[in-house]
Image (tube, rainbow, N blue to C red; front, top):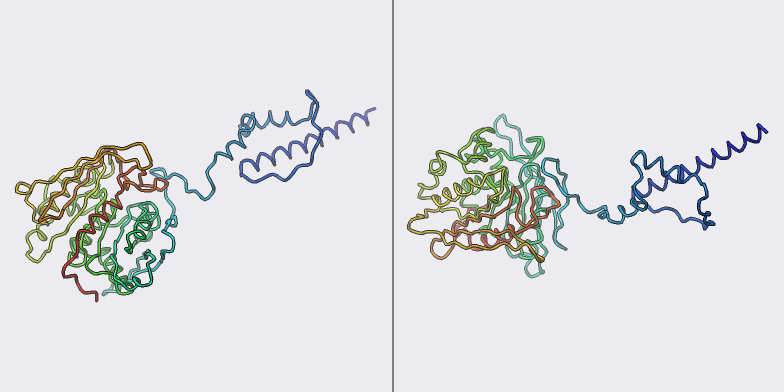
Length: 415
């Protein structure tokens, strides 16, 4: 009798273990999204029959691994496809994502090596280049070049993907160069725009200009149509490249940029980003504004009025600086203002925004775009990546439309 009871108990325990193992395997498959193997048909259990499965479900539910019936399968059905990038949350590190380049365009990786100078060893800067596909008859025809400088905590590939600039470049027929800050130079990949040496045209400015000239030697680039643009720290470096090399750069596009030339330390840079500059606005650009050889620098400036990283006071101060270097008297030539209402429904939603155009002749030399409700993000970008806002207006298209109006009549030779 005792042996019989022990045998029954052992059989029940084995049955329970098999059921528990099978249930755990099914749960793991549902969480990982892997299909379960085909099952053989089995006779349905009678209502109220005790199988041990209910016991396992109760245990798993009690420790939080099992939800309501069919919950795990519903979660798998509603989950995004594995290849879809997840939403980037501010404050969390981002990873490089290969940009969704337009079909048939070429996405190339290379580097520029800054030659050694004195005791300074050679410095390397990686860059990516997008070259649009063109008809055979136009492949040797010179094309414009847009240089895109990413912000902090971004990579060149992130910036290309987020701004969708490659897709626009394929449509419009221009090349795009994406220099990338090395993590060994700055762990957060920030450009050192606040350093005095950089603001005077050294350091990273030389690297970017060197990369531009290398690309111009290797590809059919129209030297009269080279443009520089950037976001945040990248915009700060872009304005230095443009102002220090006005014969090379035909126009500049700045998105969420700090005021120029009023900081020479990290703390000073943070103060400028939050409060703008209380002094030396004109002094910072005096060299360019007073030089008879300075040809001017057309600029489009974009900023969200909800930006808490680079406050919008910087937008108006930058506008003042670029009016000075372009010799525009606001009293004699007041801006042409256009208001664009918000459109938050439909296939192309956008924030409301205001555009101020400071015109000389018939062409806008300084275009100021203040976007209502936008925070520290590229307007009209891919919000799956950090520092991009899906809701427009489309900053990439706005910059390109402005760039098309400007050329350098006598561009500098590429040596």
